[in-house]
Image (cartoon, rainbow, N blue to C red; front, side):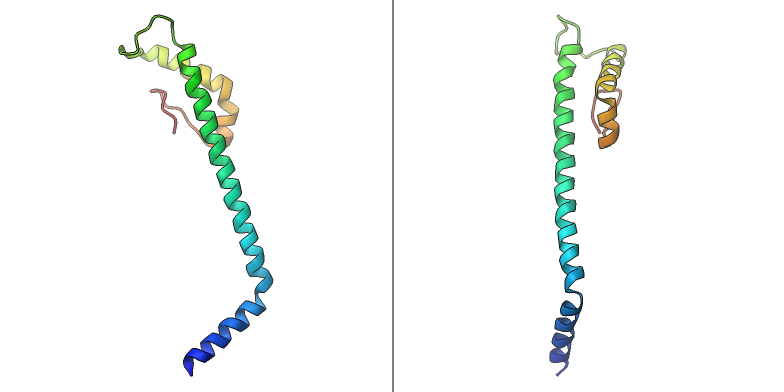
Length: 101
């Protein structure tokens, strides 16, 4: 008896709130698509910045010898000058060790 009452209540609730439920599902799909687009933009921006790092380093520097602190800061400022606005919009930060957060 109790299960049937709960079942009838759930059907009534679904019929009463049909539009709200359908609208919430559509909002959920839009939010998922927006989040995916933002994450893809982040990935593309980070890849572009990573491609820029070897171009900005000095020629003839060995990959086994670590860069000096001043070189890292120069590269960081160059990346921020080129991609700073996009990075701020997407919420990406770059550390002094040229790691993206």
